[in-house]
Length: 273
Image (cartoon, rainbow, N blue to C red; front, top):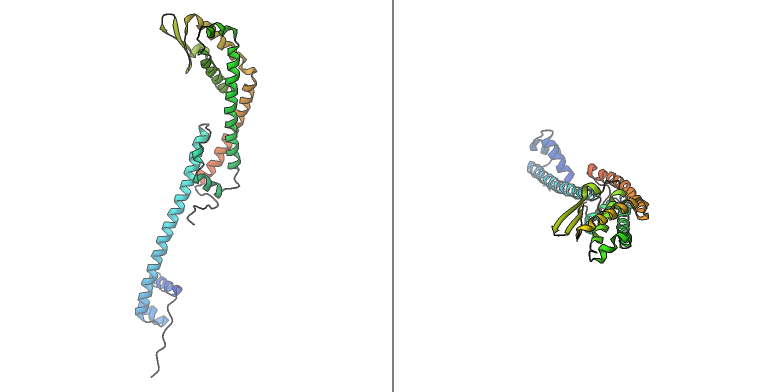
């Protein structure tokens, strides 16, 4: 009696084809078994196995797709946070330079975004330094001001820091082509006790001074405000704010591409694939 030869194992591509024929062409397992010369039990088992393998592949694909979408969503959200900081004219907080910063940089290492962000930070550092220089220069001017000599000698020297703060605000505002403070609208005198008043210029306080000194303080403020356009610090500040506005527009354009595209090119070490 001849010995029956054992059929080789069914290959994955063969069972996937049987599944296709069963689902798409409507072939029954007995028909497939007869056509391909296999036991019908083998065909049924392999079709079931092919279906299970497909479900596993689809489940893995769904998990991977969700992971990739979440990764892109994280990067786009980070780009939105960067945009929000820049829109508000802020120096970027140091805590923003975390893993997402590194991930976005790995995805787009040659993007002009990074050069512009670097310059954005340097501009703000220069503005901060210049603001401090402005305060120092204004302090020297006020301390040398003859109209304030009597006030300072009377122990009301705390008026100077308030005036410095107000005048520095004027320099910063005018350098950005903003209105700033108006002496007619924003200079307020509030009596507190007999012969003494508090002076407020906008949100800046001159503290407690004698009522008879108010006119000298106001006159000094008005006079020094007229000198602001002649200050070197003012012109340097104006140049920096002009550059900052150009950078802001350019940076927001770069970030808008990331945010609206929703898919970030390149790869990073945190990519799911």
